[in-house]
Length: 105
Image 1: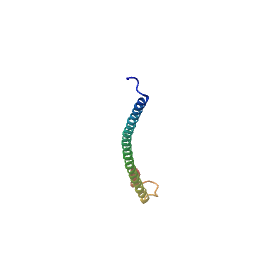
Image 2: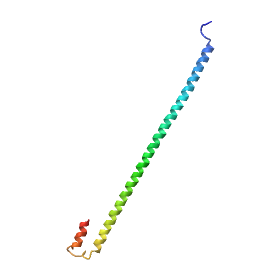
Image 3: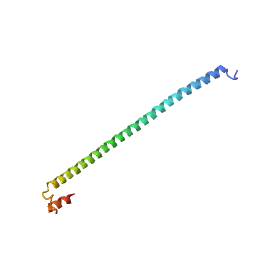
Image 4: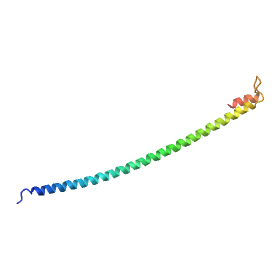
């Protein structure tokens, strides 16, 4: 009476255990996948924000560099214009004004 259960009962119990394991495993897999995707999405957002900040900083630095370059060109043009306007440009020796202008460079 209390011997081994019938093969049908053993097979049914095994199928129930396999089905329960499959359900639990699938749920755990999907939960873990969702958590990983959330972490990766947050890391991606941080990386994108860092890249945007770096690009903004590079743009500001480039704008400052271009402004400094424009200022240097403007000053060079001023000196060149002053040299061309010098009435003593064709003389063999330099006047005091010419020397002062050269010292500005």
